[in-house]
Image 1 (cartoon, each protein chain N blue to C red):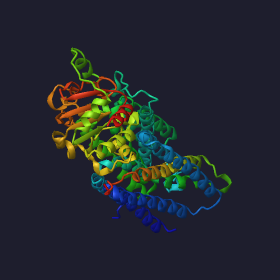
Image 2 (image 1 turned 30 degrees about the vertical axis):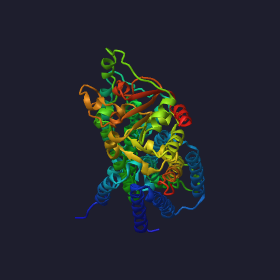
Image 3 (image 1 turned 90 degrees about the horizontal axis):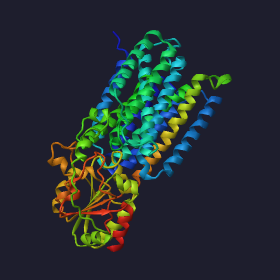
Image 4 (image 1 turned 45 degrees about the horizontal axis):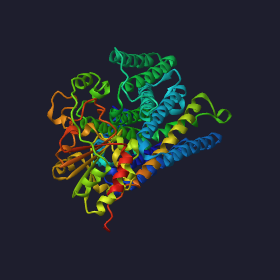
Length: 464
Length: 102
Protein backbone atom coordinates (compact mmCIF):
# COMPACT_ATOMS: atom_id res chain seq x y z
CA UNK A 1 0.00 0.00 0.00
CA UNK A 2 1.39 3.37 -0.95
CA UNK A 3 2.46 5.69 1.84
CA UNK A 4 0.10 8.41 0.65
CA UNK A 5 -2.91 6.11 0.62
CA UNK A 6 -2.19 4.76 4.08
CA UNK A 7 -1.64 8.27 5.43
CA UNK A 8 -5.02 9.30 4.01
CA UNK A 9 -6.72 6.30 5.59
CA UNK A 10 -5.09 7.07 8.94
CA UNK A 11 -6.50 10.56 8.62
CA UNK A 12 -9.96 9.10 8.04
CA UNK A 13 -9.68 6.94 11.12
CA UNK A 14 -8.63 10.04 13.08
CA UNK A 15 -11.74 11.86 11.85
CA UNK A 16 -13.89 8.89 12.87
CA UNK A 17 -12.45 9.16 16.37
CA UNK A 18 -13.47 12.82 16.50
CA UNK A 19 -16.99 11.76 15.47
CA UNK A 20 -16.95 9.13 18.22
CA UNK A 21 -16.50 11.86 20.82
CA UNK A 22 -18.95 14.15 19.04
CA UNK A 23 -21.61 11.46 19.37
CA UNK A 24 -21.43 11.71 23.13
CA UNK A 25 -23.09 15.12 23.07
CA UNK A 26 -26.39 13.33 23.65
CA UNK A 27 -27.34 9.80 24.70
CA UNK A 28 -29.30 9.27 21.46
CA UNK A 29 -26.30 9.76 19.20
CA UNK A 30 -23.79 8.20 21.57
CA UNK A 31 -24.17 4.60 20.40
CA UNK A 32 -23.60 5.67 16.82
CA UNK A 33 -20.51 7.57 18.01
CA UNK A 34 -19.10 4.47 19.62
CA UNK A 35 -19.68 2.62 16.36
CA UNK A 36 -17.67 5.27 14.48
CA UNK A 37 -14.88 4.76 16.96
CA UNK A 38 -14.84 1.02 16.32
CA UNK A 39 -14.74 1.55 12.54
CA UNK A 40 -11.89 4.02 12.95
CA UNK A 41 -9.95 1.47 14.96
CA UNK A 42 -10.54 -1.31 12.42
CA UNK A 43 -9.35 0.95 9.59
CA UNK A 44 -6.20 1.89 11.49
CA UNK A 45 -5.32 -1.74 12.27
CA UNK A 46 -6.03 -3.05 8.76
CA UNK A 47 -4.09 -0.24 7.11
CA UNK A 48 -1.13 -0.99 9.33
CA UNK A 49 -1.17 -4.65 8.31
CA UNK A 50 -1.40 -3.74 4.63
CA UNK A 51 1.35 -1.12 4.74
CA UNK A 52 3.76 -3.41 6.57
CA UNK A 53 2.78 -6.09 4.05
CA UNK A 54 4.51 -8.85 5.96
CA UNK A 55 2.06 -11.76 6.02
CA UNK A 56 4.44 -14.42 7.22
CA UNK A 57 4.67 -16.36 10.44
CA UNK A 58 5.01 -13.15 12.41
CA UNK A 59 1.58 -12.05 11.19
CA UNK A 60 -0.01 -15.21 12.60
CA UNK A 61 1.54 -14.44 15.96
CA UNK A 62 0.26 -10.88 15.82
CA UNK A 63 -3.26 -12.23 15.27
CA UNK A 64 -2.85 -14.70 18.13
CA UNK A 65 -1.74 -12.00 20.54
CA UNK A 66 -4.51 -9.74 19.29
CA UNK A 67 -7.08 -12.44 20.04
CA UNK A 68 -5.59 -13.16 23.47
CA UNK A 69 -5.67 -9.49 24.47
CA UNK A 70 -9.05 -8.96 22.86
CA UNK A 71 -10.65 -11.87 24.72
CA UNK A 72 -9.28 -10.67 28.03
CA UNK A 73 -10.63 -7.20 27.31
CA UNK A 74 -14.04 -8.46 26.20
CA UNK A 75 -14.29 -10.73 29.22
CA UNK A 76 -13.53 -7.85 31.60
CA UNK A 77 -15.95 -5.55 29.78
CA UNK A 78 -18.85 -7.98 30.24
CA UNK A 79 -18.04 -9.05 33.78
CA UNK A 80 -17.22 -5.77 35.43
CA UNK A 81 -19.92 -4.36 37.74
CA UNK A 82 -20.84 -0.75 37.01
CA UNK A 83 -19.82 0.32 40.52
CA UNK A 84 -16.24 -0.71 39.66
CA UNK A 85 -16.06 1.62 36.64
CA UNK A 86 -13.48 4.01 38.16
CA UNK A 87 -11.09 1.13 38.89
CA UNK A 88 -11.60 -0.26 35.41
CA UNK A 89 -10.83 3.05 33.72
CA UNK A 90 -7.75 3.55 35.89
CA UNK A 91 -6.61 0.03 35.04
CA UNK A 92 -7.12 0.61 31.33
CA UNK A 93 -5.13 3.85 31.48
CA UNK A 94 -2.21 1.98 32.93
CA UNK A 95 -2.28 -0.42 29.97
CA UNK A 96 -2.18 2.42 27.42
CA UNK A 97 0.74 3.94 29.29
CA UNK A 98 2.67 0.69 29.37
CA UNK A 99 1.93 0.00 25.71
CA UNK A 100 3.38 3.42 24.86
CA UNK A 101 6.51 2.59 26.85
CA UNK A 102 6.90 -0.74 25.04
CA UNK A 103 6.49 0.81 21.59
CA UNK A 104 9.03 3.48 22.48
CA UNK A 105 11.51 0.85 23.70
CA UNK A 106 11.02 -1.18 20.56
CA UNK A 107 11.58 1.89 18.40
CA UNK A 108 14.71 2.72 20.36
CA UNK A 109 16.19 -0.75 19.99
CA UNK A 110 15.28 -1.18 16.35
CA UNK A 111 14.79 2.27 14.77
CA UNK A 112 15.27 1.05 11.19
CA UNK A 113 11.81 -0.52 11.13
CA UNK A 114 10.25 2.83 11.85
CA UNK A 115 12.57 4.73 9.46
CA UNK A 116 14.11 6.65 12.32
CA UNK A 117 17.77 6.00 11.58
CA UNK A 118 20.03 3.30 12.98
CA UNK A 119 20.67 2.27 16.60
CA UNK A 120 22.97 4.79 18.24
CA UNK A 121 22.22 7.23 15.46
CA UNK A 122 18.52 8.03 15.75
CA UNK A 123 17.20 11.28 14.31
CA UNK A 124 17.23 13.94 16.99
CA UNK A 125 13.57 14.92 16.60
CA UNK A 126 12.48 11.27 16.78
CA UNK A 127 14.59 10.70 19.85
CA UNK A 128 13.02 13.63 21.66
CA UNK A 129 9.50 12.50 20.70
CA UNK A 130 10.31 8.96 21.73
CA UNK A 131 11.62 10.07 25.11
CA UNK A 132 8.53 12.16 25.74
CA UNK A 133 6.28 9.28 24.74
CA UNK A 134 8.17 6.83 26.94
CA UNK A 135 8.39 9.16 29.95
CA UNK A 136 4.74 10.23 29.85
CA UNK A 137 3.69 6.65 29.19
CA UNK A 138 5.66 5.43 32.21
CA UNK A 139 4.15 8.16 34.42
CA UNK A 140 0.68 7.21 33.18
CA UNK A 141 1.36 3.57 33.96
CA UNK A 142 2.64 3.84 37.51
CA UNK A 143 0.22 6.68 38.36
CA UNK A 144 -2.75 4.66 37.12
CA UNK A 145 -1.64 1.59 39.01
CA UNK A 146 -1.63 3.60 42.24
CA UNK A 147 -5.01 5.15 41.39
CA UNK A 148 -6.33 1.66 40.69
CA UNK A 149 -5.04 0.30 44.00
CA UNK A 150 -6.53 3.22 45.90
CA UNK A 151 -9.91 2.90 44.19
CA UNK A 152 -9.95 -0.84 44.63
CA UNK A 153 -9.27 -0.37 48.33
CA UNK A 154 -6.10 -2.48 48.21
CA UNK A 155 -4.21 0.65 49.14
CA UNK A 156 -5.66 3.11 51.65
CA UNK A 157 -7.41 6.06 50.03
CA UNK A 158 -5.84 8.37 52.57
CA UNK A 159 -3.21 10.76 51.24
CA UNK A 160 0.35 9.61 51.89
CA UNK A 161 2.51 12.61 52.56
CA UNK A 162 6.00 13.04 53.90
CA UNK A 163 8.37 15.90 54.49
CA UNK A 164 10.16 17.26 51.47
CA UNK A 165 7.77 15.49 49.11
CA UNK A 166 7.30 18.41 46.75
CA UNK A 167 11.01 19.15 46.64
CA UNK A 168 11.73 15.52 45.84
CA UNK A 169 9.15 15.51 43.04
CA UNK A 170 10.48 18.74 41.59
CA UNK A 171 13.99 17.33 41.74
CA UNK A 172 12.96 14.18 39.88
CA UNK A 173 11.22 16.21 37.19
CA UNK A 174 14.39 18.21 36.68
CA UNK A 175 16.37 14.96 36.51
CA UNK A 176 14.01 13.71 33.80
CA UNK A 177 14.62 16.81 31.71
CA UNK A 178 18.38 16.56 32.17
CA UNK A 179 18.30 12.86 31.29
CA UNK A 180 16.37 13.58 28.09
CA UNK A 181 18.92 16.22 27.18
CA UNK A 182 21.89 13.89 27.71
CA UNK A 183 20.10 11.04 26.02
CA UNK A 184 19.76 13.17 22.89
CA UNK A 185 23.40 14.14 23.07
CA UNK A 186 24.83 10.66 23.65
CA UNK A 187 22.15 8.23 22.32
CA UNK A 188 23.12 6.01 25.21
CA UNK A 189 20.70 3.16 25.83
CA UNK A 190 21.54 3.15 29.53
CA UNK A 191 20.22 6.68 29.83
CA UNK A 192 17.06 5.63 28.02
CA UNK A 193 16.42 2.87 30.58
CA UNK A 194 17.16 5.19 33.47
CA UNK A 195 14.76 7.75 32.02
CA UNK A 196 11.98 5.17 31.93
CA UNK A 197 12.76 3.95 35.45
CA UNK A 198 12.76 7.45 36.88
CA UNK A 199 9.48 8.22 35.11
CA UNK A 200 7.89 5.16 36.70
CA UNK A 201 8.98 6.44 40.10
CA UNK A 202 7.67 9.96 39.60
CA UNK A 203 4.27 8.64 38.44
CA UNK A 204 4.06 6.71 41.67
CA UNK A 205 5.14 9.67 43.80
CA UNK A 206 2.72 12.09 42.15
CA UNK A 207 -0.35 10.01 42.93
CA UNK A 208 0.29 8.73 46.47
CA UNK A 209 -0.37 12.10 48.20
CA UNK A 210 -3.78 12.45 46.55
CA UNK A 211 -6.77 11.30 48.57
CA UNK A 212 -9.74 9.15 47.62
CA UNK A 213 -12.32 11.84 46.91
CA UNK A 214 -9.91 13.69 44.63
CA UNK A 215 -9.85 10.64 42.39
CA UNK A 216 -12.14 12.26 39.78
CA UNK A 217 -9.36 14.76 39.10
CA UNK A 218 -6.65 12.09 39.13
CA UNK A 219 -8.44 9.80 36.72
CA UNK A 220 -9.13 12.65 34.31
CA UNK A 221 -5.54 13.77 34.56
CA UNK A 222 -4.20 10.29 33.83
CA UNK A 223 -6.65 10.08 30.94
CA UNK A 224 -5.06 13.24 29.61
CA UNK A 225 -1.53 11.87 30.13
CA UNK A 226 -2.32 8.68 28.24
CA UNK A 227 -3.34 10.92 25.33
CA UNK A 228 -0.12 12.93 25.38
CA UNK A 229 1.90 9.72 25.54
CA UNK A 230 0.06 8.43 22.47
CA UNK A 231 0.68 11.73 20.69
CA UNK A 232 4.39 11.54 21.49
CA UNK A 233 4.58 8.09 19.94
CA UNK A 234 2.45 9.35 17.04
CA UNK A 235 5.08 11.97 16.22
CA UNK A 236 7.81 9.35 16.42
CA UNK A 237 5.97 7.03 14.05
CA UNK A 238 4.80 9.95 11.89
CA UNK A 239 1.31 8.56 12.16
CA UNK A 240 -1.64 10.94 11.77
CA UNK A 241 -4.19 8.67 13.43
CA UNK A 242 -2.08 8.52 16.57
CA UNK A 243 -1.37 12.24 16.59
CA UNK A 244 -5.06 13.11 16.20
CA UNK A 245 -6.12 10.62 18.85
CA UNK A 246 -3.42 11.72 21.24
CA UNK A 247 -4.41 15.37 20.94
CA UNK A 248 -8.12 14.51 21.32
CA UNK A 249 -7.65 12.34 24.38
CA UNK A 250 -5.13 14.75 25.86
CA UNK A 251 -7.45 17.72 25.63
CA UNK A 252 -10.47 15.67 26.69
CA UNK A 253 -8.77 14.57 29.89
CA UNK A 254 -7.54 18.07 30.57
CA UNK A 255 -11.04 19.52 30.24
CA UNK A 256 -12.48 16.86 32.54
CA UNK A 257 -9.83 17.61 35.16
CA UNK A 258 -10.71 21.29 34.86
CA UNK A 259 -14.44 20.58 35.31
CA UNK A 260 -13.71 18.39 38.33
CA UNK A 261 -11.44 20.98 39.94
CA UNK A 262 -14.09 23.62 39.40
CA UNK A 263 -16.65 21.34 41.04
CA UNK A 264 -14.48 21.44 44.15
CA UNK A 265 -13.46 25.07 43.79
CA UNK A 266 -9.82 24.09 43.98
CA UNK A 267 -6.99 24.81 41.62
CA UNK A 268 -5.45 21.97 39.70
CA UNK A 269 -2.15 22.41 41.53
CA UNK A 270 -3.87 22.40 44.87
CA UNK A 271 -5.30 18.96 44.08
CA UNK A 272 -2.07 17.62 42.61
CA UNK A 273 0.02 18.78 45.53
CA UNK A 274 -2.37 16.72 47.60
CA UNK A 275 -3.14 16.28 51.27
CA UNK A 276 -6.55 17.98 51.29
CA UNK A 277 -7.76 18.85 54.76
CA UNK A 278 -4.60 17.53 56.36
CA UNK A 279 -3.91 20.87 58.04
CA UNK A 280 -7.39 22.33 58.48
CA UNK A 281 -8.89 19.16 59.84
CA UNK A 282 -7.44 19.43 63.33
CA UNK A 283 -8.72 22.86 64.29
CA UNK A 284 -12.25 22.31 63.02
CA UNK A 285 -12.61 19.01 64.85
CA UNK A 286 -11.65 20.43 68.20
CA UNK A 287 -13.90 22.66 70.30
CA UNK A 288 -16.90 20.92 68.89
CA UNK A 289 -19.67 20.83 71.44
CA UNK A 290 -22.27 18.15 71.12
CA UNK A 291 -25.06 19.50 69.01
CA UNK A 292 -28.46 17.85 68.97
CA UNK A 293 -29.50 15.91 65.89
CA UNK A 294 -32.85 14.46 65.04
CA UNK A 295 -32.70 10.89 63.99
CA UNK A 296 -35.49 8.78 62.61
CA UNK A 297 -36.28 5.41 61.17
CA UNK A 298 -37.59 4.08 57.89
CA UNK A 299 -41.15 4.58 59.05
CA UNK A 300 -40.70 8.31 59.63
CA UNK A 301 -38.95 8.69 56.31
CA UNK A 302 -41.71 6.86 54.47
CA UNK A 303 -44.31 9.02 56.16
CA UNK A 304 -42.56 12.24 55.15
CA UNK A 305 -42.15 11.13 51.57
CA UNK A 306 -45.68 9.84 51.20
CA UNK A 307 -46.98 13.27 52.10
CA UNK A 308 -44.64 15.11 49.79
CA UNK A 309 -45.52 16.23 46.31
CA UNK A 310 -41.97 16.48 45.07
CA UNK A 311 -38.80 14.69 46.12
CA UNK A 312 -35.22 15.36 45.02
CA UNK A 313 -32.67 12.60 45.43
CA UNK A 314 -29.03 13.47 46.01
CA UNK A 315 -26.80 10.44 45.46
CA UNK A 316 -23.10 10.27 46.29
CA UNK A 317 -20.22 7.86 46.53
CA UNK A 318 -21.87 6.11 49.49
CA UNK A 319 -24.62 4.92 47.16
CA UNK A 320 -22.00 3.26 44.97
CA UNK A 321 -20.31 1.64 47.96
CA UNK A 322 -23.60 0.27 49.29
CA UNK A 323 -24.71 -0.73 45.75
CA UNK A 324 -28.00 0.95 46.59
CA UNK A 325 -28.91 2.21 43.12
CA UNK A 326 -31.42 -0.57 42.36
CA UNK A 327 -33.07 -0.34 45.76
CA UNK A 328 -33.28 3.41 45.22
CA UNK A 329 -35.00 3.01 41.87
CA UNK A 330 -37.56 0.67 43.43
CA UNK A 331 -38.29 3.23 46.10
CA UNK A 332 -38.70 5.92 43.46
CA UNK A 333 -41.05 3.69 41.45
CA UNK A 334 -43.30 3.43 44.48
CA UNK A 335 -43.19 7.17 45.03
CA UNK A 336 -44.12 7.78 41.43
CA UNK A 337 -47.10 5.47 41.75
CA UNK A 338 -48.33 7.85 44.43
CA UNK A 339 -48.01 10.75 41.97
CA UNK A 340 -44.98 12.21 43.65
CA UNK A 341 -42.60 14.04 41.37
CA UNK A 342 -39.07 12.68 41.71
CA UNK A 343 -35.84 14.01 40.26
CA UNK A 344 -32.18 13.35 40.87
CA UNK A 345 -29.54 16.00 41.55
CA UNK A 346 -25.94 15.15 40.67
CA UNK A 347 -22.99 17.17 41.89
CA UNK A 348 -20.10 17.29 39.40
CA UNK A 349 -17.71 15.54 41.79
CA UNK A 350 -20.16 13.03 43.25
CA UNK A 351 -18.52 9.61 43.14
CA UNK A 352 -15.01 8.71 42.16
CA UNK A 353 -14.95 9.69 38.51
CA UNK A 354 -16.72 12.15 36.20
CA UNK A 355 -20.26 10.96 35.51
CA UNK A 356 -19.98 8.07 37.98
CA UNK A 357 -23.46 8.60 39.50
CA UNK A 358 -25.11 8.96 36.11
CA UNK A 359 -23.85 5.58 34.99
CA UNK A 360 -25.05 3.89 38.17
CA UNK A 361 -28.50 5.43 37.87
CA UNK A 362 -28.64 4.47 34.21
CA UNK A 363 -27.73 0.93 35.22
CA UNK A 364 -30.69 0.92 37.61
CA UNK A 365 -32.95 1.94 34.70
CA UNK A 366 -33.44 5.52 35.82
CA UNK A 367 -34.36 7.51 32.69
CA UNK A 368 -31.64 10.07 32.00
CA UNK A 369 -34.14 12.92 31.63
CA UNK A 370 -34.96 12.65 35.33
CA UNK A 371 -31.33 13.22 36.25
CA UNK A 372 -30.10 16.80 36.54
CA UNK A 373 -26.80 18.58 36.97
CA UNK A 374 -26.14 21.02 39.78
CA UNK A 375 -26.89 24.22 37.85
CA UNK A 376 -30.07 22.81 36.34
CA UNK A 377 -31.67 21.77 39.58
CA UNK A 378 -30.23 23.90 42.34
CA UNK A 379 -33.11 26.40 42.28
CA UNK A 380 -35.67 23.63 42.61
CA UNK A 381 -34.65 22.66 46.13
CA UNK A 382 -36.51 25.68 47.52
CA UNK A 383 -39.76 24.35 46.04
CA UNK A 384 -39.24 20.69 46.85
CA UNK A 385 -40.77 19.01 49.87
CA UNK A 386 -38.19 16.37 50.60
CA UNK A 387 -34.51 16.01 49.73
CA UNK A 388 -33.25 12.46 50.08
CA UNK A 389 -29.48 12.50 50.50
CA UNK A 390 -27.99 9.08 50.00
CA UNK A 391 -24.26 8.63 50.28
CA UNK A 392 -23.35 12.26 49.64
CA UNK A 393 -21.92 14.57 52.29
CA UNK A 394 -19.49 17.39 51.56
CA UNK A 395 -21.32 18.39 48.38
CA UNK A 396 -24.39 19.29 50.44
CA UNK A 397 -22.61 21.19 53.21
CA UNK A 398 -24.04 24.73 53.52
CA UNK A 399 -20.81 25.79 55.23
CA UNK A 400 -19.29 26.15 51.76
CA UNK A 401 -21.56 29.18 51.31
CA UNK A 402 -21.47 30.69 54.76
CA UNK A 403 -18.12 30.16 56.45
CA UNK A 404 -15.08 31.74 54.78
CA UNK A 405 -12.83 29.87 57.24
CA UNK A 406 -13.97 26.49 55.99
CA UNK A 407 -11.61 24.56 53.72
CA UNK A 408 -14.46 23.95 51.30
CA UNK A 409 -15.63 27.58 51.25
CA UNK A 410 -16.58 28.60 47.73
CA UNK A 411 -17.15 25.09 46.50
CA UNK A 412 -20.44 24.89 44.59
CA UNK A 413 -22.85 22.85 46.70
CA UNK A 414 -26.38 21.59 46.29
CA UNK A 415 -28.84 23.82 48.19
CA UNK A 416 -30.32 20.86 49.99
CA UNK A 417 -31.05 22.83 53.17
CA UNK A 418 -33.64 24.91 51.33
CA UNK A 419 -35.97 21.93 51.09
CA UNK A 420 -38.89 21.74 53.50
CA UNK A 421 -37.37 18.61 54.99
CA UNK A 422 -34.13 16.73 54.45
CA UNK A 423 -33.66 13.01 54.86
CA UNK A 424 -29.99 12.16 55.29
CA UNK A 425 -29.02 8.51 55.00
CA UNK A 426 -25.66 7.95 56.61
CA UNK A 427 -24.05 5.36 58.80
CA UNK A 428 -22.78 7.78 61.43
CA UNK A 429 -22.22 11.45 62.11
CA UNK A 430 -18.61 11.21 61.02
CA UNK A 431 -17.38 14.03 58.81
CA UNK A 432 -16.91 13.55 55.10
CA UNK A 433 -13.77 13.49 53.07
CA UNK A 434 -12.85 17.13 53.66
CA UNK A 435 -12.75 16.32 57.38
CA UNK A 436 -15.32 18.94 58.33
CA UNK A 437 -18.64 18.66 60.04
CA UNK A 438 -21.73 19.02 57.90
CA UNK A 439 -24.01 21.77 59.26
CA UNK A 440 -26.89 20.11 57.51
CA UNK A 441 -26.94 17.37 60.16
CA UNK A 442 -28.01 19.82 62.84
CA UNK A 443 -30.65 21.77 60.95
CA UNK A 444 -34.17 21.91 62.31
CA UNK A 445 -35.61 20.31 59.19
CA UNK A 446 -33.11 17.49 58.87
CA UNK A 447 -33.90 13.93 59.83
CA UNK A 448 -30.88 11.65 60.05
CA UNK A 449 -31.40 8.04 59.04
CA UNK A 450 -28.52 6.09 60.52
CA UNK A 451 -28.21 2.91 58.49
CA UNK A 452 -26.63 1.28 55.50
CA UNK A 453 -27.89 3.08 52.41
CA UNK A 454 -29.21 0.00 50.69
CA UNK A 455 -30.94 -1.46 53.74
CA UNK A 456 -32.54 1.86 54.67
CA UNK A 457 -33.84 2.39 51.15
CA UNK A 458 -35.35 -1.09 51.11
CA UNK A 459 -36.99 -0.52 54.49
CA UNK A 460 -38.49 2.75 53.35
CA UNK A 461 -39.88 1.07 50.26
CA UNK A 462 -41.60 -1.51 52.45
CA UNK A 463 -43.19 1.24 54.52
CA UNK A 464 -44.46 3.30 51.63
CA UNK B 1 12.95 26.44 1.15
CA UNK B 2 11.03 23.31 1.80
CA UNK B 3 8.89 22.91 4.92
CA UNK B 4 9.82 20.08 7.24
CA UNK B 5 6.97 17.52 7.33
CA UNK B 6 7.21 17.74 11.10
CA UNK B 7 5.55 21.16 10.86
CA UNK B 8 2.54 19.61 9.12
CA UNK B 9 2.20 17.02 11.82
CA UNK B 10 2.54 19.69 14.45
CA UNK B 11 -0.25 21.65 12.72
CA UNK B 12 -2.51 18.62 12.80
CA UNK B 13 -1.67 18.15 16.46
CA UNK B 14 -2.38 21.73 17.48
CA UNK B 15 -5.57 21.99 15.46
CA UNK B 16 -6.86 18.70 16.88
CA UNK B 17 -6.32 20.00 20.39
CA UNK B 18 -8.74 22.79 19.51
CA UNK B 19 -11.17 20.39 17.86
CA UNK B 20 -10.97 18.23 20.98
CA UNK B 21 -11.57 21.26 23.17
CA UNK B 22 -14.84 22.17 21.46
CA UNK B 23 -16.04 18.62 20.98
CA UNK B 24 -15.44 17.67 24.60
CA UNK B 25 -17.19 20.75 25.96
CA UNK B 26 -20.26 19.70 24.01
CA UNK B 27 -20.32 16.30 25.70
CA UNK B 28 -23.19 16.14 28.15
CA UNK B 29 -21.95 15.73 31.76
CA UNK B 30 -24.05 12.62 32.26
CA UNK B 31 -21.91 10.88 29.64
CA UNK B 32 -18.55 11.77 31.17
CA UNK B 33 -17.84 8.21 32.26
CA UNK B 34 -18.46 6.78 28.77
CA UNK B 35 -16.33 9.64 27.45
CA UNK B 36 -13.44 8.42 29.56
CA UNK B 37 -13.85 4.81 28.53
CA UNK B 38 -14.14 5.66 24.83
CA UNK B 39 -11.11 7.98 24.87
CA UNK B 40 -9.34 5.13 26.55
CA UNK B 41 -10.33 2.77 23.77
CA UNK B 42 -9.28 5.12 20.97
CA UNK B 43 -5.96 5.98 22.57
CA UNK B 44 -5.15 2.29 22.10
CA UNK B 45 -4.67 3.10 18.44
CA UNK B 46 -1.09 3.02 19.66
CA UNK B 47 -1.46 -0.61 18.56
CA UNK B 48 -0.38 0.50 15.07
CA UNK B 49 3.08 1.16 16.49
CA UNK B 50 2.97 -2.16 18.30
CA UNK B 51 2.11 -4.03 15.11
CA UNK B 52 4.94 -2.43 13.17
CA UNK B 53 7.32 -3.29 16.00
CA UNK B 54 6.07 -6.87 16.28
CA UNK B 55 6.45 -7.51 12.54
CA UNK B 56 9.99 -6.15 12.49
CA UNK B 57 11.64 -9.56 12.96
CA UNK B 58 12.34 -11.66 9.89
CA UNK B 59 11.12 -15.20 9.42
CA UNK B 60 14.05 -16.91 11.08
CA UNK B 61 13.84 -14.69 14.09
CA UNK B 62 10.26 -13.67 14.84
CA UNK B 63 10.92 -12.94 18.47
CA UNK B 64 13.81 -10.51 18.38
CA UNK B 65 14.14 -8.20 21.37
CA UNK B 66 12.39 -5.31 19.69
CA UNK B 67 9.52 -7.40 18.36
CA UNK B 68 8.88 -8.96 21.77
CA UNK B 69 8.12 -5.49 23.07
CA UNK B 70 5.83 -5.08 20.09
CA UNK B 71 3.96 -8.29 20.92
CA UNK B 72 3.60 -7.29 24.56
CA UNK B 73 2.25 -3.90 23.51
CA UNK B 74 -0.22 -5.63 21.17
CA UNK B 75 -1.69 -7.63 24.05
CA UNK B 76 -2.02 -4.55 26.25
CA UNK B 77 -3.54 -2.42 23.52
CA UNK B 78 -5.90 -5.21 22.44
CA UNK B 79 -7.21 -5.56 26.00
CA UNK B 80 -7.92 -1.86 25.91
CA UNK B 81 -9.49 -1.73 22.48
CA UNK B 82 -11.95 -4.55 23.07
CA UNK B 83 -12.47 -3.77 26.74
CA UNK B 84 -12.85 -0.05 26.13
CA UNK B 85 -15.30 -0.15 23.25
CA UNK B 86 -17.39 -2.99 24.68
CA UNK B 87 -17.72 -1.47 28.13
CA UNK B 88 -18.67 1.85 26.53
CA UNK B 89 -21.27 0.04 24.46
CA UNK B 90 -22.59 -1.64 27.58
CA UNK B 91 -22.87 1.65 29.44
CA UNK B 92 -24.46 3.55 26.59
CA UNK B 93 -27.07 0.83 26.15
CA UNK B 94 -28.26 1.61 29.68
CA UNK B 95 -29.08 5.26 29.05
CA UNK B 96 -32.80 5.29 28.39
CA UNK B 97 -35.38 8.00 28.06
CA UNK B 98 -38.50 8.18 30.17
CA UNK B 99 -41.22 5.93 28.82
CA UNK B 100 -44.20 7.84 27.52
CA UNK B 101 -46.82 5.26 28.65
CA UNK B 102 -47.51 6.53 32.11
